[in-house]
Image 1 (cartoon, helix red, strand yellow):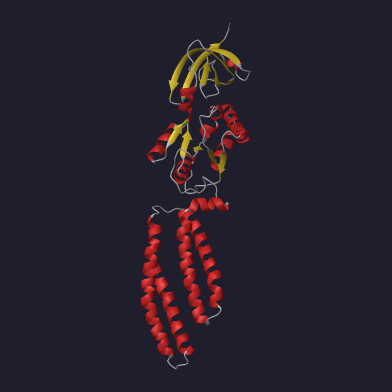
Image 2 (cartoon, one colour):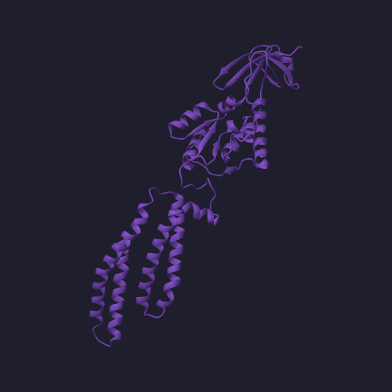
Length: 345
């Protein structure tokens, strides 16, 4: 298509040149001059277009993938190239007849625009960042690597280990939180469930602390995935689109993401590897927030999300933190389950 476009402009240019040359010589063979110019333009235009296409193809062969960022940057490059062509060619075009000028300007704009698209598209990410039209990770052109950040879900936002692990430098990359994840956490913060409400509000406070302390960069992404209704599905689709690792405590979500080629990290497992172990006989300080399933039980949670069940602790529910002695530790898929009793020493 590019070759035919070049040939078309050269044919028009050659025809106009033939008419102009015949008239300038003062002959009556302007039609013959135009015909000769047309034939010459057809032959030379095809040859010129093929040579030019092969030369530009060397650049295109180096590009093995296309992306929206490449298209946007390439379009800007095409506009810039066409504008440059007008600036360079228009003064000369004003000195020649109109048909000749139109063909000359059109050919220059086509070539410069095409060259601008190909050159600028190769450096799409750098060009867009330079112009301030996008910031990583909203527009990406490179695959995931260790320099990039983590896309977090609501289970991580509400996990008490996020802030200490970040402060300790274990999580040193950028943290990305989608707007729909924040909306989900806000919904939990307004929940009638006291435990869920407390954890969600703590999660929002954690994000605010991360933003103010500046140990990591926190990005709130406005990207939406309207074709998917579920939040988990939106997260996986967004992680694939942005080519980011997903940070989650949700086992089924992590397995689903991995099946779709999205790398994942489990914050809770990471925290458990770094958190000192708690065994029978150890002491913990916990505020019991609700009653348990069994009669007389009180239930609380450690900062890392571990559930603590206290038999005969119903009267302590809703009170201040109390010192408890651990009697048993049961590992579960969701973390540790601790059984404890009030410290009577």
